[in-house]
Image (cartoon, rainbow over all chains, first blue to last red):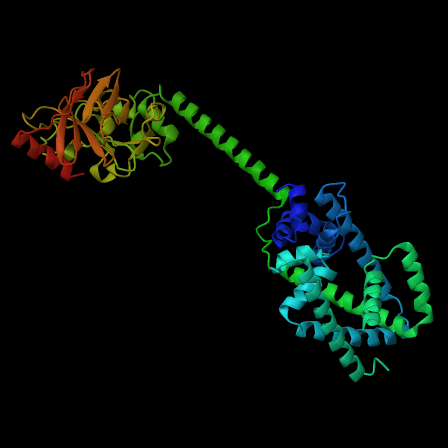
Amino acid sequence: MTDSEILERIRQGDESALDFLYKKNYKMMTKLVINNSGSDDEAKDIYQDALIIFWQKSMDRDFVLSSKISTFLYSVCQNLWRKELDRKSRLSSEEKDGEEINDIDKKERIEIINSCINELGDTCKKILTYYYFDNLSMSDIAKKMGFANADTAKTKKYKCKKELDEFIKSKYKASDFLD
Amino acid sequence: MNKEFDGTNKIEAYLRNELSPRERSEFEAHITQDPLLQNELTIQSEIISALQNYRKVELKQRLNQIDVSTVANPSNYLKIVGLAFIAVILVGVGTFLYLNQNEIAEPTTPSQATAQTDTTPLPTIEKELPSATQPPLLSADTSQQATWENTPSDTKTEEWVVPASKLPAVKSPKSQPTGSKAIRPENEKKNLQRESVDDATKHGAATDVMSKKLVEAPKEEGINTGGRIAPNTEKNLGKLNIVRSDSKYNFHYQFKNGDFTLYGDFSRGYKRFFLKNQEYLFFEDNFYPIDTNQVTITPLLKVTDAKQLEQLREIMEQY
């Protein structure tokens, strides 16, 4: 499979193209992290993150790949690992108390949101994640989900999002986040 | 409701970076004056972020299912190819040297050849034979030996020199040359010596053709007429044992230029032995006389004489 074929398949939301890419470059990408004082698990995590960034970027029709996919992934892995090393070194220094408090509030809110997402139906989960993460157009979502057309997908997406928002806000009220 | 819808759409468009620069700056200015809108923006930002994270985790879980243990490392792949290449070269060079060595060994006397190729230490025979003046082991006193050649079905060929003492109807020797006197029947098995018959490889026959030779003191004996067993020489058995599948000639043989060639399927194994100036082929319970002067391809005709068969079978039973 050539790079352009992979890119085209990813743009259609074909996850098997992602699998192929993952396997193809696994050794080379993980070696980069492992050779720079990273563990096997960290290497795998960084490579997966890089691949997902590529997945998201590919969905953007304005994205132009000016190098080989492997070169792109390699540079993303390098940047991510550099950031991770920076984060690790910052963690070793003192953390501010105020940030900890804010993090606790945010963490609680995120937990509420996650629990609400998990309680959504599969169709709503897919529509919302395809839209907000994969950046798929309404017509692509309609194709993937087997809807009649883009308008159906748009209506479904609106209803799913409203359901999620209301569910979250009801839980926020119970937790005094919305006063 | 419409106002709320518009507000949510605006927030979403802002978070998805879908507003024009002008709309974006207007929206940001409005947010600073509207704490409720600011709160809603925070909520929506966290929801979208959580949805994105959910999908990311989902994709990661998918990737974690992929077995990467079999993924070939490009550098390892090159190493494997390199090692395989070196192995092929080594095998090639080894084979070439082995064949060359055998070709060099060929002109030597049988005893010399045996000494070169045999891993079994030579028994006391050599010590008892006068080393400098004694003829080669096989030709030393072979005037009364039967020569055997076995071809097991695994394509290995074995050539045996059978002690005359083991042959039926053997008369007591009138005399025994000194050199072979020390070799007793009980030592014969120990004295087996392997000698490669490398020409077979060159002619496309069995690739691992080995011959075993056993030397015994000459003894008089006879099969049919009490005649003497013909002297055993390499020449008598021919240098080669070539089995060829040929649709035209099935179960034929040829003895040309010292090369013995068999035509047909002899994969089940056969034996050759030389007795009383007559060479025989033993194959599937039958004996076939072989004319060593037969240069044309001739059919193998089995021995039918009952008395001769009995004596030949007695010989076979001992081996």
